[in-house]
Image (cartoon, rainbow, N blue to C red; front, side, top):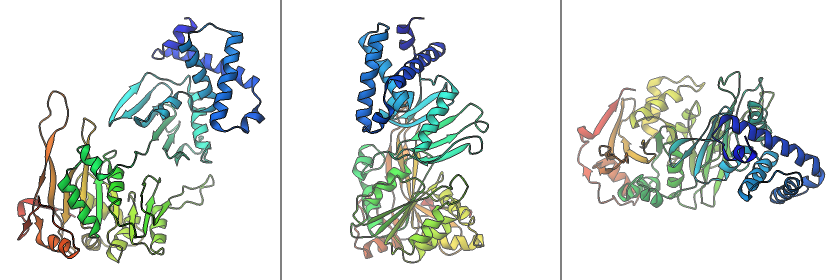
Length: 446
């Protein structure tokens, strides 16, 4: 197969490997001709320009004859290998890609607009993929090998990276790079169909009235995006502390303290957990605490903070419904080393959580607020929620696009009075129920 056809056929496994060999050959030639000491003194952009110029001279001197497009492609691939992350480099440069999933050297998937697709790209070998992985984790002073086969880290550029390698990963070294979505405002989310104006007005009233909100949903449902948008409703003069595993939130207020967990070092020491940060944040005089995601014993600390003067706080949790979110909080709270009865946890949750905002991701990639539910249970009684907004989908048409309408229901009088007392008007679409509507109040076994 000619060089021309090898470059032009990335979807053919053998051709891709021959192309990878060609890239490796020219990468070695490039390294022979450059001055590494001089290169280290240059900025990244200047380094790339210098490498491209030197490689262009090598190709002109030693051949082969290529078209302008083939020459540019070869130069880009060689420089990406020498300086960047190889075949992943153009994917990282593509702003439309939100997640990159490498399932071994022969399988690369990406997520665009909420949909996952496989790309006709491959690494030349498992060794080349491992070199790329090692280059990525070295930027955050981590290592990956058989004694430490899993790494979860955040890159200096903000992406979240997860690596798992053999013998744990049977399909070969596996790499997942998740890009943090840009910060959307609530009006932008209305434009995307995630919620409507009446729901925005209600959520804004809840945040300003210092209701404690839990944003619930599955993986990739848009929890962090909504949490970030809701945080923009917090008054600018308040002191806000954000606590996250990987810093994703992008608050615009002036008085924001961002805290991020720290994994253990190579000796297994020095780990700082979300629970450590939640406990420490209580000593920092916060007006509001925002926890990126609760997933363990820190849930109890967060609930206690919400119940003892830190109202108006927000957090996310993985759950499939509003009732499931409350039961999951109960389970997570029991994971604390503090031995607290399950019944007492009900009391904590009923007194701490005011609103559950449930999100879902649909098959067409759209993400919607499918329910806004108020927690109306008290004390140690079973969890009860009253739905005040919900998304009612229509049957899927031939285009497979999800359509539907948002439905709004009366608020319990106690909630309406609390909003009124905080000076927040009730949105026009929501009435006030004289008593709890049994049809819209659901009970969860807790």
